[in-house]
Amino acid sequence: MSREQPVTPHGNGRSAAFWMPLFLAWLLALLATAGALFLGEVMGKTPCVLCWYQRIAMFPLVPVLGVGLFASDARSVRYAMPLAGLGWGIAAYHLLVFWGVVTEGLVPCGKGLSCADADVQVAGVVPIPLLSLAAFTGILVALWMARGRART
Amino acid sequence: MSRKWIVLGTVAAVVLAFVAGVVVFTNRSNQEVKQAAQTHSDALVRPHSPVFGNPAAKVTIVEFFDPSCETCRAFYPIVKQMVNASFGQVRLVVRYAPLHHGSDTAVKILEAARQQGKYWEALERALAAQPQWAAHDRPQPQMIWDLIGDIGLDIAKARADADGPAVAQVLRQDIADMQALKVDRTPGFFVNGTPLREFGEAQLKALVEQELRKAGTP
Image (cartoon, rainbow over all chains, first blue to last red; front, side):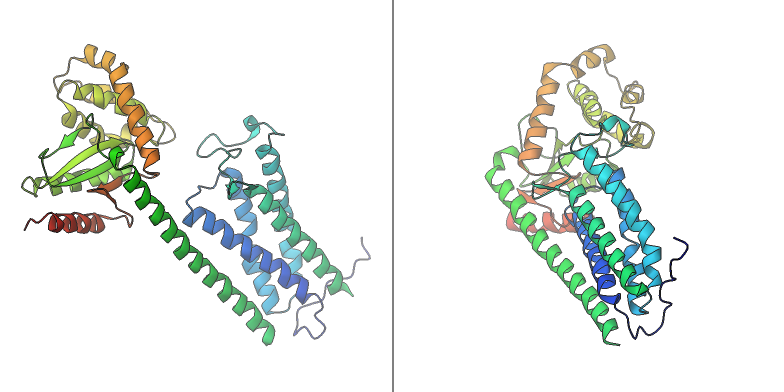
């Protein structure tokens, strides 16, 4: 652990092999953000409490990684990782609630929508928390790849 | 340099796709609501509903109404004024869309007052005090009983009526019609069967004007 090399300091990214996976992570965050806003603002599905926590982790990834892409700055991976990790955890928990593995009594959903509501599905098939978990997983994998490439 | 353009181009593409999605989705849901209003035209006006204004008016505003809804409260004087200023050409039919917690209780109290001919008085009292009793996290619709204590009701009878089968039937029918007509927000307006899709006071007035013109009145 202590022998870890510092990630490439920002620059013009002459050998920025990390850029592509960073872009991928950013793109996933951008699509997830647009999708969440579409579901909430256009289709009128009110986000439940757990959805909001996932949004709080997802939305800032767009500017954080966006700035990283603009400056070819691999350090942005380090700032994005905790957000993506937290979001992944909340999405996983939400999915457990949705599938009934964890009972709803444990969820802070006293007010507003139930997080286990059947309405949290797209086209009646795919649960939204599953989409969220997939997006966070993809982002984490891409960030991890970017970090690996930035080191070499 | 080109990488920055990739980022900016991607943002532009996603924003564009979003806007296109909004247009497609809005058109489709407008179509659905229009269709629902056409296929379920019998669900718009039921004989049991309260009517404000001339019963034989040429233009009928159907309002799906929730006593706990702030926007319904804000629209009440607007719609009332529209009916009053129409010289008998426009009437309002009140349907219930109890979408908030406690709204059903509020509706039952109002309907009980209606059975004694005190509906509009009770409604205005309830709306005036809405901020006190209709907090969405802790609704206290029972407070309405105190608000309407002095409008001349036989309260004992009203309390019995509120839980009676007639009122329950009104509520059940209105909720069924609300679902058939795909009303998911209040107030939900229909003017002579046409749903008001773009919400707003000016839009409602324009729709009523349009229907008045169609009906051949100056």
